[in-house]
Length: 401
Ligand SMILES: Cc1ncc(COP(=O)(O)O)c(C=O)c1O
Image 1 (cartoon, rainbow, N blue to C red):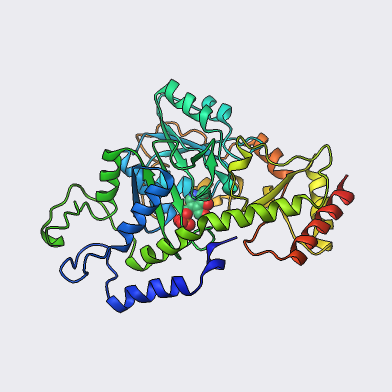
Image 2 (cartoon, rainbow, N blue to C red):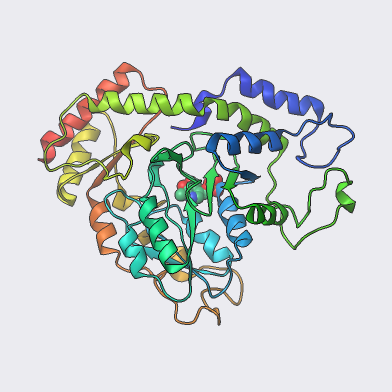
């Protein structure tokens, strides 16, 4: 699945060039760098590709969520509604702001269910943040309608879905801001890194200042003298990652094309039985095909499928057991496991009665995840691997139904 499958001499040359020039800082050293700014080039290239006005590179996808939320003014007392099926970073970014994550149910797209999110809106809700899980867009038109109706911000955790589209528009560009992760598991990877895209100039400026200790980044003035707009922190990306990102970005479309071709070929190897479904995606053509999921009729048939598939040579997972992505497994969230004496928002005077970040039963989410079997996809899958996968799926269906 990840972009490091595609590393070749071009990435090696791009990184070597940065090292040979000894210019690893994205800012500063104006008189020595000959006008070369790789991170800034990468940001411009991403913004242009996504059709966003602005892009801010940061040190991780988690940092992208956090910096964008800080730039949006999220703080203690605010509630953000997001999904019970996501990576914990979506929730931690909210907690790091001292705000309250409110975790709603998913639907059969495996993304946040708009109806469930709407039910959890209170007078403290500031934003809804759908997560485009496994490379496929959430139902963004409905989220836009809900956010407009209630006067809420719309954030997109598109960390798993760089390159995916919804009705022709790249995910990440449909809300007030969106984020991409460039970590080692992602389709476009620079080792560790993240991106924020937005059309909002003020938000972009705030993110740019905040991610670098408040620096205003006037490149005509030495870094120590340029002045600061706010308190912030260090979430900078280095030139090594910027150079890597520029090469990887050129490979993104090809990688997506290859993943889609692999998935199509695999699906040609069997007929999907009547009571089995693919994810119910609002825009199937826009997914980046990083996973293949079947929704089986029930938990028992999913377990039978998994066993038979493994025996036929291709292991698959059942998503209710996914400790990375399913909030029911997050003991640290349930316990509010923080090191500080006052644990905002857990003991926060602004938060009042804490709502649903206490694990609800998430009955619908659990029911769906319990019957969802998943295979990870790679960019390079030869015919033998594809045939093995087809054989495993056929064996799974036969054993389960
Ligand atoms: C949905 C989601 N949000 C946020 C992140 C955080 O990204 P990073 O690992 O780059 O910090 C991830 C990473 O897997 C993710 O899957």
